[in-house]
Image (tube, rainbow over all chains, first blue to last red; front, side, top):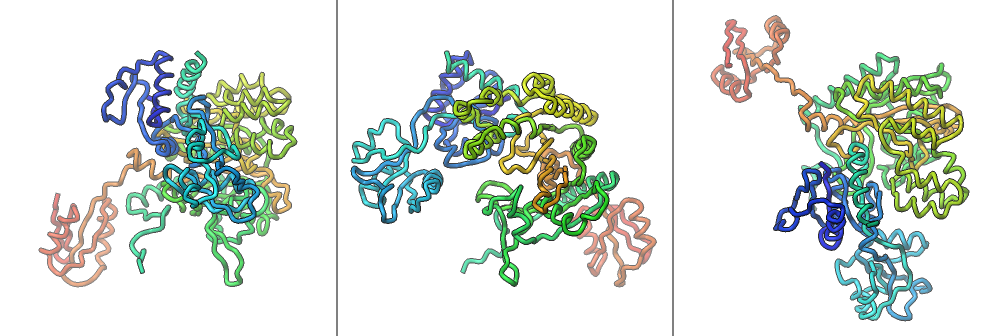
Length: 207
Length: 394
C-alpha cells in the first residue's frame, strides 16, 4: 500500500484527474463526504491535508509521497525528496510594490509583508539586503496600501489582484508548480511502488 | 515569573524503566560485538572547543550547535558528533600508535533542531572508527560489523543501503563554476529530479549522466547494469567492490532488503568512498549510518584514511519497543520482611536471587502491612527470615 498525501483543493483535483486518466478507479472519491482517508484499488491510501501538513506527513514518513506546491516546499525547507514536477498549479514568487516604488534602490530601511517569511528572508539575504519582515496571514496586498510595508513577497498567478490594488511585480523570485515529494526512507524501501506511481503520473501528463 | 521546573527542554526527554532497559540491552550487545573484534573503547568530553567542529571538512552549520563559553570567554560546543572529537583525540594523543587503530564509543550527541519537529536534540550514539587503512578489507570489516550490529538488534528484519561517493566525483570535478557545482550537489543529494533536469541544460558535458541519476537507485542488480554507464578501470573496481560488499551482507540479511544508491551525495563533503545506511520499516529515518572519510584528518594535517559508522541508540530502542520486538523481562518479585531492622539474610537472599527472584526489602513495621504492599506491587512471594516463613501470593 502506498500512502499518498494530497493538498486539498485545486492540486487534489488535478492529481485525481491524472489518476483517472491513467485508468485508476477513482469512484470511492466521488462521495467521500467528510472522510479523511480513502483507499483506491487496494493500492493507494490517500489522505487530504493542508499544504504544510502534506510536507509534515511526508517528512515523518507516515505518508510515503505527497503532492504539494513548490511555494510550501521552499517555505518549509524540510529534508524530503522532490522527484517530479507535475507542471500544474503554475505561478511564481515575486516581489511586488506600489507604482514608482523600487525597494531595490531605496536607501532607507525596507519593510516587506509576506505569508512566506522564510522564502523572503533567504531571498533578501542572497541579495545582501537588510529588510524587516512582517508576517501577514491573508490578503498581503493590504500591507503596502495601509503603509505597513513598502512591498510584498507573494505568489503571483496572473497579477490581476495586484493590479486592482495598485501594485506591480518588480522582481520575479522563482517559478512555482506542483511537485511530487517523497520521504527519503520510503523512496528506498518502497522504490518499486513509488517508481510505478510516478510513471503513472508521467504517462497521464504526457497524454 | 513563570517557572519551567517540571518540564524538559524541547527535543529532550526522560527515559523510564523499560526504555532504559531496551537502550542498555542494545548498547551491551554492541559493546560486546565491537570488543570481540578488537576495538578499544574511548570516551570524549561532552563539551569541546568550538574550533574542533568549526574548521575544514564536515563542519556543521552554526545554528545546529549547542554553544556555551568557558571562564576565559572561549566558545565551547556540546559535541554534535563523535567522529570529529575522535579525529582530534587521534591527532593529539594517539598518533604514535600502530595503525590501523580500532576505536568504539557510546556517548550522547547534541544538536539543535527546529522547534516542533519531533526530533531529539540529545541522543545516544554507539559507533566505531577504523583509522589508518584505505583497503577494501577495511571496508568489508566495517560494513560487516554494521550489518552484524543491525542483525543483533533487529534480527534479519532490516534494510541496508550501499553507495559510493567516487562514482559521481569526476562529474562534480568537471564543473568549474563553484555555484553551479553546489547546486548540482544539492540537487543530487536531495534527489531533486526537476532541478537536475534544469541544471543539465546549463552543463555542456556530462549532461547525459545527470539525466540518468534518477535511475541510479535500485536493488543490487543495478551494479551490473551500472558497469555500462560508469566506464573506466576505477569505476569498474568500485562497482566490483560494491558487489562483493553486497554479497557479504546477504549472509546476515535477505538480498531483497539490499538497496543500492549510486547517486549518493553529501552536502558537506564528509564521505569520500563507500557509504551505507540501515533502516527498518516504519521508521522515517535511518537507524545506522556510516562510510569512508579519507580527508577528515587533513584538518589536522594528517593524511590518514578512516571509515566508521554510528547507530542512533535512542531511535533503535524506540523502534524495538514500538514494534514490541524487545521482550520486557517479566520479573519474579520476592518481598523480604524482618520484624527487626537488618539487611543481612544473605543466604536466603542469595538463594532467591539464584532462583531468578528480584528482592524487595520491606520497609514496613508489620507483616500485615507488608502483605498489602506485596499484593499492590504484584509480588510472587513474601519471605520472613525470622521464622523461615514463606507465603506464596500467586
